[in-house]
Image (cartoon, rainbow, N blue to C red; front, side, top):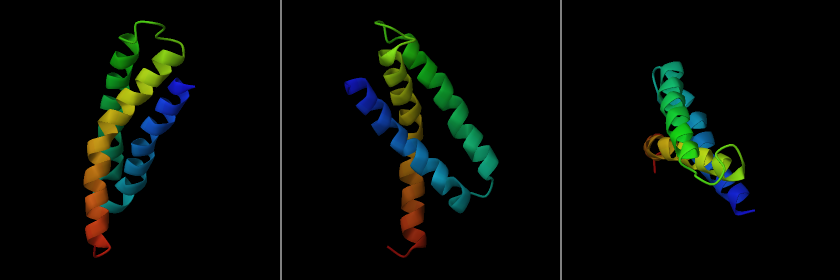
Length: 88
């Protein structure tokens, strides 16, 4: 249950960052790639070091947490750009 909650929470910055990329970047395809590739690599490393079961629920939660952690700074920066564009 906890693994599912971690995976769902970790996916939120991923969705938000990729939603805002097309609106606030000049080269959206490049930006998507620059977020996805390191996210996959870092998520894979996190899943590998989830010692209990890298292919099971703990591995999925670790992968999602790593993937989301890579997207979090981008989501924050794009949220600031989005707020400025809206006049806040």
